[in-house]
Image (cartoon, rainbow, N blue to C red; front, side, top):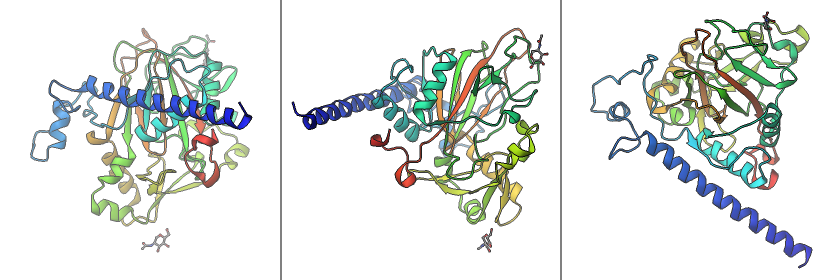
Length: 355
Ligand SMILES: *[C@@H]1O[C@H](CO)[C@@H](O)[C@H](O)[C@H]1NC(C)=O
Ligand SMILES: *[C@@H]1O[C@H](CO)[C@@H](O)[C@H](O)[C@H]1NC(C)=O
């Protein structure tokens, strides 16, 4: 076999593996939807169906956390690529494609060491490490020895309970809105090691579907508007050194924005963002857009099992944590890393031949 023919054979092998993986995604996505559906259902719970049926006048049922149900059919596909250690090129392509298509994807039954999570992050993109001074004492909690890992935990690494009122990211936001475009194209990877018996879900909101369904008057008010985001306005970074803060000039993003793949989306960042160029009051516009994006047709709530890894695309989703009974008797321990999408030729979503 000549070298050239060998190469073609290898390519065919990768293509076949990729086809099988894409099949696995669609099957798993169908299964994930099936799990949520009622008999004879369309994947929507009764209260979700009433939300999408415009003739219904009943308010949707609220869950025990006081939030409305999540009805997104797009977010939250389950993807089976086996153990996430040492994944090959085809699996990396399948993950990127699933995250692009579904905004956030779930991998069940994983067992990653901290070093293995960083290695996974390295193959998904450029691993992000924030300046040490941004990791304040009482807010952020970097994993000792792994500056790329943020601990999202009820307990400090030394085992001390952080207390009843400690929370992390309990408001709708995109990670990384303070990076200037296109550096804000960040994937987050969150791995659950220990979860409480109930509660503590992470909510996700679909900024593509929210853009598509945006009412004309709101779209008109947002048409010429941008958000600006600064590390100086983010409470988690309040202890940042001046030198480190100065390395992050104010980032500006059009609200009516596009994904790297060309699809339109709503980019609203976080509540600490400021609005420029809006018709009317900017803060009120941002709040209205956030409420719209976080409404039932566009949301999905992930109830964690230990061993879940969730990967999401911050440009096309918002996320937030939800409370649980945090009285010190049970632990919640998750580990988050972030990978910047590698911006290859043309700054598109990574192409298969660029991985
Ligand atoms: C554990 O770590 C936290 C956060 O750094 C600190 O505030 C606390 O005093 C430590 N507790 C012990 C017992 O070392
Ligand atoms: C759009 O915003 C820019 C600056 O933010 C401003 O100069 C311009 O006049 C605005 N255009 C309209 C139509 O509002």
